[in-house]
Amino acid sequence: MSAETLIAAILTFMIWSYILGDNPAFRLAEHLLVGSAAGYVAVLAWFHIIWPALHAMWLQPNPATVLPFVLCALLVARQWSLMRPWAAVPLAFLIGVGSALAIGGALFGTLWPQVLATASLSLSPADFGATQPFLTSNFFWQNLAVLIATIGTFCYFAFRIRPGGPLRDLRAMLIRFWSGVGLWVIMMTLGALFASAAMSRFTLLIERVQWLLEAFGLR
Image (cartoon, rainbow, N blue to C red):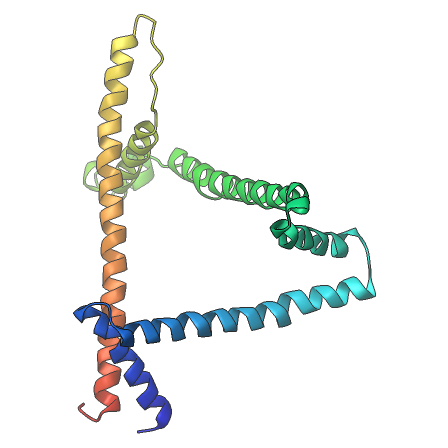
């Protein structure tokens, strides 16, 4: 057994020792993991992001290359009280750009494509072929399930129903019904995501146990 394999096995058992409660072995392995990950990220950030940007700023000084370092300097200078008002500029820039990217990504990358995909679904018998009745077609029921789930999820987030009008009670009843459907859809989705995450963790555990058995010659 090589030294690298022995160290990896020892660190694995140190992490697993957390099953017995918090202990020095687990804390040591945790600190090694966090420290090595932070060092690795710092090295990558310096050689792949900061140093190329500094080189580009030195060769071609322009607002596009100088402004990022000015914002970073203002952000670092936040620890001095005189510079704190100026430090709000990079913070506002980061929050504004991050919010815009998040909202734009959610709207045009998830919500709008889901609306278009749902609107393009067909429940017409003519679109499922003449060889099979559309009520027994898997495509029909799949499209119907997607349509119901999408409408129910959208209605679940209708937090306010406007009062007034002759159809006020009917509208409120429909919103409550579809909100209940959306609640069940969200619960099933979260359950499926949790089960998928748990299965992936169990898969990693099984692979690690198999690696340990092979490393110690027990398999």
